[in-house]
Every structure is written in C-alpha cells, then in structure tokens.
Length: 415
RNA sequence: CGGAGCGUGGUGUAACGGCUAACAUUUCUGUUUUGGGAACAGACGACUCCGGGUUCGAAUCCCGGCGCUCCGACCA
Image 1: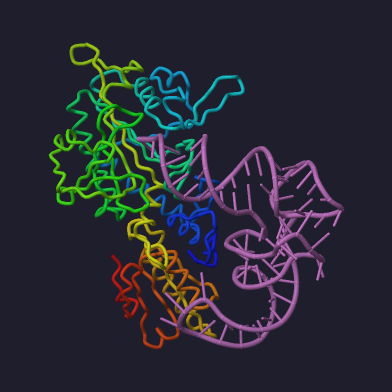
Image 2 (image 1 turned 30 degrees about the vertical axis):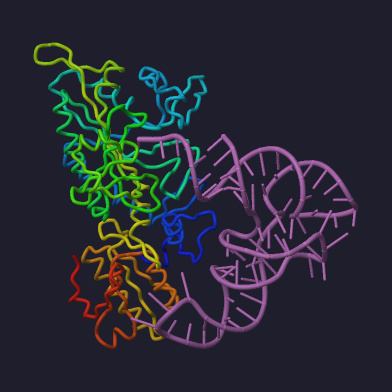
C-alpha cells in the first residue's frame, strides 16, 4: 500500500472531545473516526487491524469446535418475553424499534435467546449435541454514558459464542476449553502477560459466578485482586471470604489492580433452553434439558485496550500479530530520483516476498515521515535514503525496542 | 440518570456587550529545503451548535433545546 494513496492522514492534534489515550491515538493515526459518543467508524488502517483480531479469534474458536454463523440484528420481541428479558427493567440498555406493521422489535443487544431458538429449530436429538456456534456481529447498547473512547461504545463488534451441551459435565469441559482458548487469544494479540482469568458475578445473564478476562490498565472500569503466582484474579464485586475460599485464594497473595474487561464467559445453566423449551431426546427417547454457556469478546474494546496498554509517548506500538502492516517502508527522497528508484524496488521486493508493507512514498520531509511512522506504529520500519544507499544498506528500526540495524536488504530476516 | 465543565474555519485556540470574528495548524500555489512534524510569499476556508429573548448593538448576557467531555450511579 502506498501511503500517498492511503485514505486518511495522520494529524498532529487530537479533537478536544477525545481524552482517552486509545481514541486519541487511533484518531490521530487515522484508524478510526468518531460519529458520535460511543460510535466509531473503522477506516482502512483500523479495519485491517480489526480483521486481524477477528482472524485470530476465529482460528481459536474453530480450534475448539466452534462453527461460525451470523445472526440478525433485528430480533423478535416474543422470544425475549419468554425469558423475561424484554422488560427494560431487566435489560435497561436496549435499543428497540417498531416495524411499520406495528410490531416491536429489539435491536441486537445480545443473542442468547435468538441462538437458542435457532438451535431449537434444527436440533432434536442428543446425537446433534454438543454444539458450539459463534459469530462476529454488531451489538447495540444504549449506554447511559459512553466512555473512554473504544472502551464503552454504544455500537460495537463482538464475537459471541454459545455452547449447548447435554450435561453439566459436558458443558464444563467445553467451558474450560474455551477459557484456555481465550487466554490464547489474549496472548496472541499481545496482552497475555497482563490479562487474567477473573472470577466475577454474572450480572443480567446468570445468577452464579462467572469468569471474566481482565487486562490490567489504569483506565479500566473494574477493580480486581490479582494472584500473580497463580495467574488468576477475583473481581471486587465477589471479593469475599466465601469466594476466596472456594477458589483457594489467600488475601495475602492478592494485589488490588484496575483492569479492563476484555472478555467474559458465562455458565448459563439450563435457564434459556428451559424458558424457550429447547430439549433433545436421549438414547431412551426421553427429553433432556440442555446446558448452555455464552462467551464474548468485544473486538473494538480489545483493539482499544492494545493501544491503551502498549503505546508510548510517540504513538501506537502494534504487536506483530495485529499490526496493519508488517513493514513501514520510509523513503527519504533525493533530488536525482535515485532513492525513489531504490525504494520502489525494495517495495516490490517486499511485496514479492508476501510481506505486507506500507510504503511512505509521499514527498514530505524526513521529520514528518518519522513522526507519522511512530504514530501509526507498524512494528518494523525500513528507511531508504541517500545515506543508506551510499552505504549499500537499508536501515531497519524496530518500533517497540527502538533498535536500529543497518544491513543490505537481502540480509534482513523477516519472521 | 445526578453533578461539573464546554460548544467559534477541517483541527487546536483567541476575542471588554462595540471596527471586516483574530492566531496557529491543516489544505491549495509558488520559491526553497531534504535524517526527527523547516523557511518565505500568497490564497481558500466561519450564518460563532440550534431556537427564542434582552439591547441602539450579542460569539459574549438571559431562557429553552441538542451535542461533547469528565466525576458518580449504572454496566455481558
């Protein structure tokens, strides 16, 4: 991709209505655009990152047996009435609308009910279970107060998975598998060291204890108690002697931290299948109840968290795994056009190797190009200039470490 | 939803109730420059959030609305 053709440019100043680091950097660097509070567009750079995050999650969900589907945004009120969740008193952040014909519809807040109905439509036998379906779908939540940029949005893309199992034990087995898959996701997007599986309360979803995945950050809305040795944590909302004992945690080993809820998994028991009368026949022809779980990761929030946590004073520092490009090729042109020729050839060479590259071919001054490069945060920068040409090398600078290397182009190792 | 603050060119700011709403940046032209957001010259760009009101006169004061940010409450 040539930077001269890239839709959106960087800007020096962030709009004053963004205070959070994640939104400020993502907007300045041209990854997202704000439509209104808690509602953001993804621009070309941002969409590449979003898709990479999506691909990682998809891989991990497929690896544990997930099957991808795509549910609708408009939802049938009747289904929600059956589980008692249509009432605004139960879920207070619904967006709802009315069909021209008169019927009320819900605008996707979550999908437990529709997914259960979908499965009910197709699944009648114990032989068809367990089933794990998931989707990447936009959720709408009428938050009283959107906040912290990408952290609490009113419209956001979410991966939500729903598991349907034949027994508590079968459910639990998958639940644990999914928890492990989640940890792999957070590790792969660069948040592994500071993300903890955290015991928490279930809110509007379930009465029992659930698990959240909390990423340490000062801008987080949650307070958790972390056991560094065991790599687990407990949310303040369930921080009591009984729960501590249940999970074998010692107050002395726990440290209080602020954190961002980057993912969560819920044991839902038989609540939704029961309420919606979804059952299957077992080997003996007797109807059996179904055990359900739901598992969510907000993609925008995850992107925002990566920016919030990994960026430095110069800009974003993308982990290799979700960076919009692998290499930022920065050419510092000379008058004779020699550098241009060389840079073009490096550019073509990189593309031929299958390495994604953003080529800064703009006729700008070095300072501006470097500042932009730091802001955008691509892991590896390759500089081609009159200087490097004179030495018969290119300059390689790593965004994260700041390490600089000069070597002939064909000696660069790409991981 | 309670509290606080704020709405002025694309962006960031300024302007006592009083001249043609100023400055920087961005953008465009040209000259020049080329290893960390250069310099000079010129140009474009604003119904000062919306609606009322007070006043000879409103960006400025008053009322109402809408929006944005922050704190709190709330929050898979």
